[in-house]
Structure formats: C-alpha cells, structure tokens
Image (cartoon, rainbow, N blue to C red; front, side, top):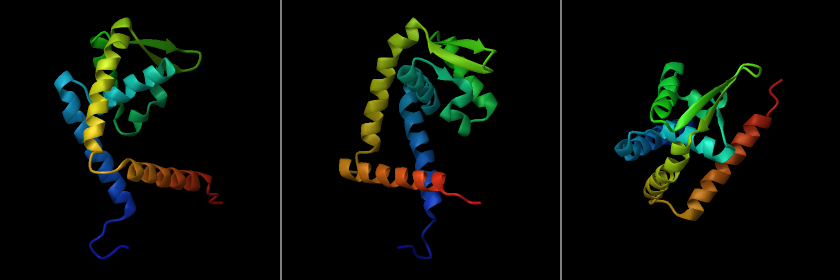
Amino acid sequence: MANETSYGFGWYLKETDQAMTRYMDQNLQQIGLTRFHWQIMNRINLSGFAVKEKLYARNYLGLEELNEVIDSLVRRGWVRIVKQTELDETKLLFTDAGENMFPEVAAKVKEAGEQMFAPITKEEYETTVNILSRLIDHMNAKDFE
C-alpha cells in the first residue's frame, strides 16, 4: 500500500483539512466570511446557540483569531454574546439579522461543498466518512494504561 514516496495517513488528513479550509475561505470571501465564521453560524443554527469555549474552531485558531471571527459576526449585527458567569461560558446567539442571513450563507456553503466533493462519488464519500468514524471511535476507546 505505501511506498517510499507515500506520506503517512495523518499527513493526508491534515493536508485535506487545510485544503478544505482554503477552498471554503475562497468561496466565502465574496461575502467576507471564512470557514470558521460558517462553523460558528452553523453551530448556532443547529443548537440555537454556540458555546465559545466548546467551538470546534478553537482547535484551529488562536484565541485572538477566534475572538476576531466572533467579533466580526457581532459587528455585522448577526450574533450577540451572552456571558454566563455561573457556568463560566460565553454563549453566542443569532440576532434576527443573523437568523435571516443564515440561509444565504448556508446556500453558498452547500454550493461550494458540492463543487469541492465533485471528483468523488456519494458512495466514496460515505465510505471515507465511515472509515474515519470507525478510526476515531477505535482510538478514543483504546485503553493505554
């Protein structure tokens, strides 16, 4: 399977993720957004709110960059911040303007996603996701003691 010129599995995963970020950023830049803006907006849409301290984007962005992404959504009037001191959490919620803007952003992301995955079949996509999910489950369940 691998030869001297092959890279390791992790390299392909990281390169794919970086390429996906570049691709989505290029497609969303027309409306002044990035992949990470989308992740925050999508989380708010799915759950009714997002918790800043639990955002997926925090694994990829430094705190200053993450704050800038959030602040840009606030400056647009799309997101409002609610500090929950008792839980030591920061909730992000849509404003009416953000809720109204979400479908337009979602349509742009859907179109970009369809273009991004055009070279692979639906079956290949599903197989890849299934394999990655199984690997994640296996590695998370592994007892290393």
